[in-house]
Length: 482
Ligand code: GDP
Image (spheres, rainbow, N blue to C red):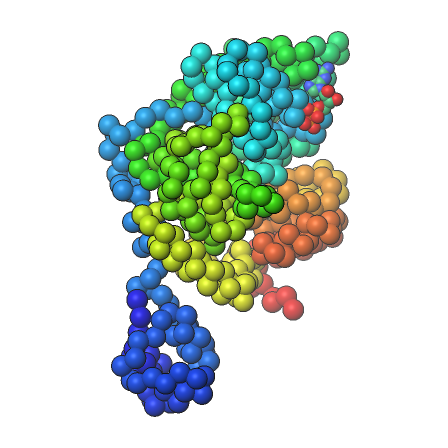
């Protein structure tokens, strides 16, 4: 994975002597056959407006070697059932936190040794010997933030709907997020202890979203619970296990561990501490690991009961120490064959990160849409529509969907009334969608996020303008925005 001075000069079409002179000025005395490492070569080349692609040292090749057997080629006899991983979503105040607490508490009273003592961002419970892992951050922020990073951490979503309140805006958002991620939903109708609760009405409302209970001829599993009074919590867990059975979740615990960072922080005494949800293989103490731009060895692992563990298999959350820095939630963590490889991958990523910061990665935008359609890169334009009144949102939606062509289908993945908020941007970023605002503006935080994620936001006051823009963008006729 190096290139000689002579070879680099040749590829850039300049004289080797010129390059040697340049290097001398930078303080290194080299000959024409001197090998250059990737960083030096890239830096030199950039001075001549060339980019060096690191083919021999591509991260993909490094990471592909990581699993002993590649995905899809997994031998069936190596696969073992693994617990489902569940995220709780729903409208604010409908009882997400209470439900997570009730589930945690229900498990303690089940008489298991050592209740869940640590808040590490995820925990597991056991029901008659079968485990379920819960991500402990309720709401769809965590869910989409992870998905925006291309990570799928959740097998099942529990949608909490308060029986006295029914379907609310964030209920709809949660449904859209789960659907966009293709994750099945188990509905928990909560607060059934309340005198004004009306579970039947909630069921009725949810049918509009394709969530139809089994006894009404549909396929969605429902449970009626009270998080506060701890009613039917076990039954809900049963339902989750039932849904999990349908999914036939499996993983091979026999290979090197790979997991996802659920949360991470810097601990004064222990250094970087990351909660890892193991997704494949088994993670062991001492394993060389890499996550994002950080690397190291697993120094210690602690589970949600505060127990030190030596290994963690599929679907198990553990707190891991030993990384060189604090990774981001949603980053993947890989065990690799040795620490050198871990370091190489991490450093290569740091390099790439620097490059990416320079060339600010941007997601799909209307400006490049036509080119991408022509290159066959884009077959669907996904849009999120926010507007000041339901009527105009619906009107824009109807008009847009009609613009679909054979080359490019138009898909509205989410609509809503109100300003453009962070969760809209996260959804758009995760799904590679553009955001259309109709007589509304992005909130400052959402605007910032859109900027950093490269999400295209377009604001309109007139329906005709919105439709014309999209039509023009699809046909390559959009006037450039300056
Ligand atoms: P979140 O915003 O979705 O996390 O909702 P919380 O779990 O914070 O609950 C919001 C409020 O609803 C709190 O005051 C809870 O005590 C209450 N609550 C949650 N579950 C129930 C329930 O099953 N019955 C009743 N009566 N109140 C509940």
